[in-house]
Image 1 (cartoon, rainbow, N blue to C red):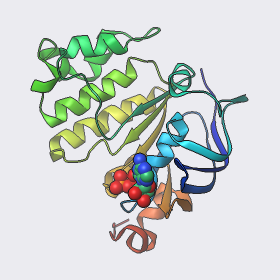
Image 2: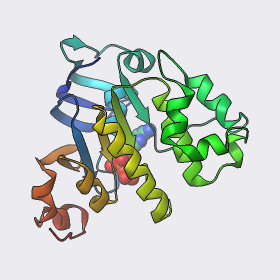
Image 3: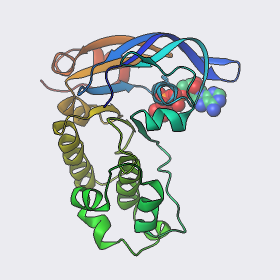
Image 4: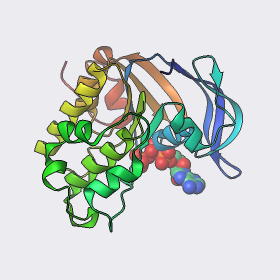
Length: 233
Ligand SMILES: Nc1ncnc2c1ncn2[C@@H]1O[C@H](COP(=O)(O)OP(=O)(O)OP(=O)(O)O)[C@@H](O)[C@H]1O
């Protein structure tokens, strides 16, 4: 079980390049957090920094009272953080089931994965490379869940997928959040993200420029100003 994820004065990037500037953020356990912003705003870099995949120039990262700043990604994973990267990392030459078993750790089971994603059960003997884009995304999410994370970091999981698949995935995120998992959702589909989330961050230029209840953002002009879309309340 992990507690709140806290970033304090975090400046991070790639090699000498600084992308995130002085980010301070606490995500309480069980929160549904949306992160929105234009392309290049630093959303992926924020998730990657939580996971230990970037160069930290300054600041600290903690899970509850435990500092994880110096932990490599696999140890952060073992501590309860799970990232589903935008690149949908799956093994194309392994079957669906082999992909899941390769990721399995702790108490996570195939049954749980197949209950969440019945489509993966139907396709369990198919190769990862034979799956549709939506099925690959399901497999990428299920692989991360097989590592047993309390906190799930989702990087644009709906990107390029048909509306019906997006709806199915959002239902899965609802279930995961209802089970008490913390879900951090980076998403260009602002409407879906804000309907799901209780809190939302808007990022611009590697900084968090707004941190609001999701409901408050839906009706405000901030979305139009920062990401060029307007949503009805
Ligand atoms: N590996 C890298 N090396 C150097 N700079 C990078 C690297 N990856 C991303 N960047 C830069 O960091 C900045 C933030 O990129 P990031 O991918 O975090 O933004 P984003 O908000 O997730 O955008 P998108 O919605 O397009 O994925 C951009 O200016 C990008 O060019």
